[in-house]
Every structure is written in structure tokens, then in C-alpha cells.
Amino acid sequence: MQIGLVGLQYSGKTTLFSTLAGLQLDLSTVKDEQSIEMVKVPDLRLDNLSKLFNPKKQVNATVEVIDIPGLRMSDDNKVKITSTFLNSVRNNDALFYIIRNFKNEAVSHPMTSINPARDIDFLEVEFLLSDLAFLDSRIDKLKREILKLKDDKLKRELQLIEKCHAHVESELPLRTMEFDEYELKILSGFQLLTIKPLAIAVNFDEDSVEEVDSIISELQEKYSKSNAVIIPFFAKIENELINLEEADREAFMTDFGIKESSLSRIIRTCYELLGLQAFFTVGEDECRAWTIRKNFTAQQSAGVIHSDFFNKFIRAEVVHYDDYILYGSMSKCKEAGSWRLEGKEYIVKDGDILNIRHS
Figure 1 (tube, helix red, strand yellow):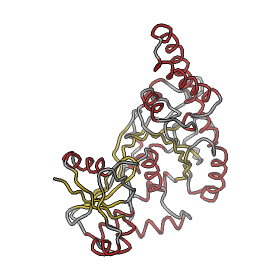
Figure 2 (tube, rainbow, N blue to C red; figure 1 turned 60 degrees about the horizontal axis):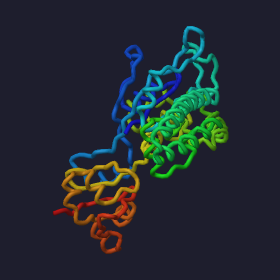
Figure 3 (cartoon, rainbow, N blue to C red; figure 1 turned 180 degrees about the horizontal axis):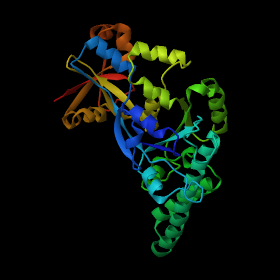
Figure 4 (cartoon, rainbow, N blue to C red; figure 1 turned 90 degrees about the horizontal axis):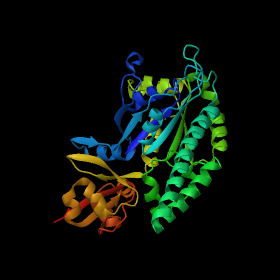
């Protein structure tokens, strides 16, 4: 499961990527090729469980983040989308637009001025055009095949593709449409760009802290129907924070008027964009967050731990994190009636603590 960071050159995209991955940023070593890192998903619930169990190790959930090379100005002074860039974007399961809202005379914006809405529109329009070109081609191909084969499945696909074409032609991304499971299965093989879940991260600097709320509010209103999450962040400041002790970090943030680090929210948003959630296994050896898709059953979740747990599943002992923190132990959860045994069809909830019984 991959999240692609997409943006214009000098947007702070690589700085954010380095910070998410916990890497020291050295701009002199940055290459014009994509980079991939597994990023830990911060989870205060897991931290609290580890404090209670004091395990030998703690294992956070992870997501794979890809830094796609930034779009730059071409020889004719225009930012152009290349097929190489589009292919890199297609290979991701969800996207994060990294949008610049900071001034730096030493590093000019590829479009010469700071305008977050224009940059978002540029990416959205280019991706819509890419999807439209594919849908045009697919419609032509399906019509030719239907004339030869008279296949009902092809006719149904044509209806779906024409519906998508009309939606994109009206300048609306496909992520704002609703599809049933059959339609999603058809569309999943096409790697359409505007159907991918999207978050927009707007990069501010220390001189624009006071503007954050108003700018984010304006963008949220403008893109309220685009089905995208919009998050402010401070790439340069966040990169400096990762090497500070907790007390120094809090003081640093207070000095700049930043209430909380945006990194945790960005990573959690990545996780949620992919339709993922976590359940926990706990004990003295290990406290771990396991990644599953929403609506996974207890048996499917057990299979994430080990295939034998899926094949030989009997029951799952279940306590939700909130109940465990409230009562303080498994025995007290049992007394309160919040501990229970569930069968293979139980739908696991985000934050469930599971102990799998198997033969």
C-alpha cells in the first residue's frame, strides 16, 4: 500500500519526505528520481499500552511513502507533465499534493509566484485531462469489441466508462463519484488518477503562522466538493524538530506559535486514506499494531498475524482499547463485561485488542 507525494519543484516535498522517514535532509544528495521509505504510524494508544505492559519491544504500523520527483520548469518556461511523471503517480494507492505557501528568494517558485489554489488546480486539471484521454480511448476500444463480441459484460463496462467520462468532462474528479463493488473492481485495473484518495498538505514557514487558519479555511471552502483532506504543515520547522528532545521540541513549537506537530496527523491521514485501521496484540514480549482494512473479520485479522491463525481459527478474545484503559486490566474488563469471545465473522473495530484462540 503506497502513498505518493506529488508537487511542484521547491514545494518542500522532499523535506517533508525526509522528516516523515526520520532522515537527515541533505539537499546536495537529492537526486531527480523517486525515493521510497516505510514510515511508522504514530499511535498514542500503542504508546499507552506499552507503558502498561512494558514489553521487550513495541512495533508500530507502517505505510510506504514515495517521494515522486517534483515538477519543474521546462525550456519554454512552462511546467509540463511528462508520461514518466504520470506513470509514477499511477503506481500509488493514494496521493498527497504538497503545495507551497512560503516565500524564499533563493528558491523561486516554478510558476514565479506563491498561489496555493493555482497549484492545486494545475495538478487537478492535468490529472483530469489524463483520465479523460484514457476514458476516450477505452470507450472507442469497447465499442469496437462490442460490435464483434456482443458481450453483456463489455456493454456494462461501457456504460460505466461513459458515466465516468461525463463526470470527468464536467471537471469533477472520479473520487467524488460513488461506485458499487463490481464497478470498483473494473476500474481498479485502470489506475485512474482522479479516483485515488487525496490529501492536500500546504507548506507554511515560520513567517506565515498567523495566516494558516485563514488560508486553510479558504482552501477548504474552495475544494469542499473535491473529497480531499487539507492539512497545514511546516516542512522546515518539522525537519528541525525531529532531532530535539521532547522538552526542547515543545519550547521550540511554543516560540513559533505552533500548537502541535502536523507530522502525526499527516501520517494518520495517509493511513486513513488507504482505508486502513489497526488492532493490537499486547504482552510482556511485544505490543504491536497490526494493519488491516476496514471491515476485516476476526478470522481475516488473525490471518494478518499468521496464516495458521486464519486456517485454524477458533475464537478471538476481544477488548477495545478504550475499555482496557478505563478498567486497567483484562480481569477487570471481564468483570465489567467488556471482554468477550467473538467468532470468525466478527468485524474488528479500530483499536480492538485481540488474542486469537486457534487449534
